[in-house]
Image (cartoon, rainbow, N blue to C red; front, side):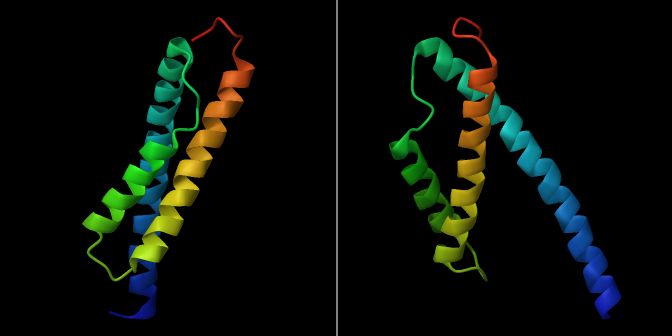
Length: 95
């Protein structure tokens, strides 16, 4: 394969990642609504630790576990940020 073909494959994977990230964000917003209705905080450190541990356990490489955790830290952080923004946009009684 030449470099252009490889780059096309990367572009296709980026398209898939974009769709997956947005779907994950939509689900996180749903979780945020449920949490708000239950009076639970947005941040759940235990849940985040379990996510990172599971991702390391499932990691087949070539990314090392540190890289996987850093990537998922960012994804989780952005989901949490989005939950907070949406929670502030909605009134206290809206869920």
